[in-house]
Image 1 (tube, rainbow, N blue to C red):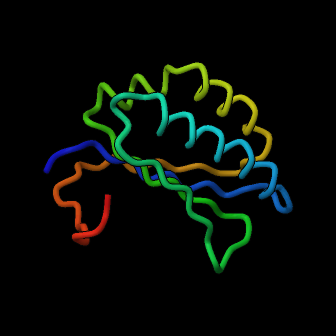
Image 2 (tube, rainbow, N blue to C red):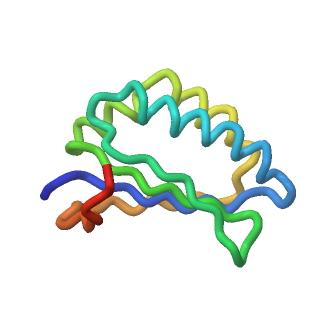
Length: 105
């Protein structure tokens, strides 16, 4: 299995998690539903740190990820969340194995 994966770590302005979640959930939903090369887009909340959100995204390839970054919905998300984020780091990965249970879709 091959693919291009991104892990994003957001540290939020304290108390802004609900505002950020509304925007990131919309971005994830739009990416999953409308981007042909987006295979997987998860939004994760830290149990230990209330103001920390992670994204796990899988694309067909780097070109599909670049198309995501150039999309109008990503630009809107990036612009509207800038004041809610104190730090953001991105890790670029190659997907080499995806574990699945037999009943997973």
